[in-house]
Amino acid sequence: MPPAGCSRRSLLLGAGAAALASPTLAQRAWEPTRPVQFIVPAGTGGGADQMARVIQGIVSKHKLMRQPMVVVNKAGGAGAEGFLEAKGARGNPHMIVITLSNLFTTPMATGVPFNWQDLTPVAMLALDEFVLWVNAESPWKTAAEFIEAAKRERLKLGGTGSKQEDQIIGVAIGKATGATLTYVPYRGGGEVAVQLVGKHVDATVNNPIEAVTHWRSGPLRPLCVFDSQRLANTEKMTETMAWSDIPTAKESGLDVEYLMLRGIFMPAGVQPAQLAFYEGLLERVRETPDWRELMQQGAFNTTSMTGDAFRAWLTKEEARHRTLMQEAGFLA
Figure 1 (cartoon, rainbow, N blue to C red):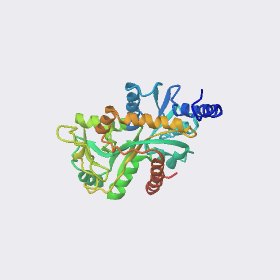
Figure 2 (cartoon, rainbow, N blue to C red; figure 1 turned 180 degrees about the horizontal axis):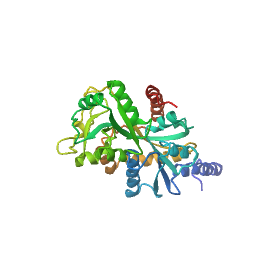
Figure 3 (cartoon, rainbow, N blue to C red; figure 1 turned 45 degrees about the horizontal axis):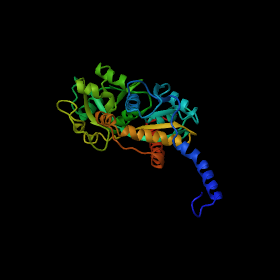
Figure 4 (cartoon, rainbow, N blue to C red; figure 1 turned 90 degrees about the vertical axis):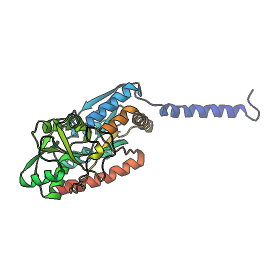
């Protein structure tokens, strides 16, 4: 018998409504049904590659996803290879891309037909810092000493790629100080650090995570960080120094500031439930002790964003990078 006040017709209507609602519930419960390709538009050993592999490890260790995540480096054309593959994978929910600021600089420098709006923004995971590094056996103990030397002789600055973030900072240093630096491009941040350890270049502006191992073991020395404030991490990374002990560039008389995106994107045309899955997955990744350890070891700015706030930030950063690229003479 139907409950009092409830006709058979209303029961049937209710059952029909529930049936109509069930696909929505199923859609909300979407998850990958095959391995997820995790594209890194940069070389191995660099900051983006390291972060992608940490995420891959966290997802596997904590069983956050039933399907495996497969990291694939596609560094060709300063990352254009990876971006174009993602652009061509419209509607594919089994692909994600980790981005750095070459998301903006590569299409501006090369004219490759790609824009961040060709992808679906998922989340800003953090902002990455840049540090001016020299070999620990060099005579320079401060950024001011290094700049004075660079004014007297043409020193070599190693960095990742051409007309990308590292070279933008090098040009900015020259414009701010009158120093002339010869920029030497390499495929990735890991290789850049090794070249400085081997004294093949005089300095680099590597991200903290790319040089921290060499700093801790002795071969490298940080001179300044290109941020408006000192790094927050106060735990000693060497016997005498924490990240927070590194002065800012401005403190050192060098008026240059630059931070870099570490974000995740999907191809365009994916479904809302598929986007929601990865937003939730990355939130769970960020809650793990493993992620907190990465943030500390790499001295990351832990700012995170999703949705409209992230899109607004991307729009603003694209405009800022166009100005930086134009000032450096790097626009295609």
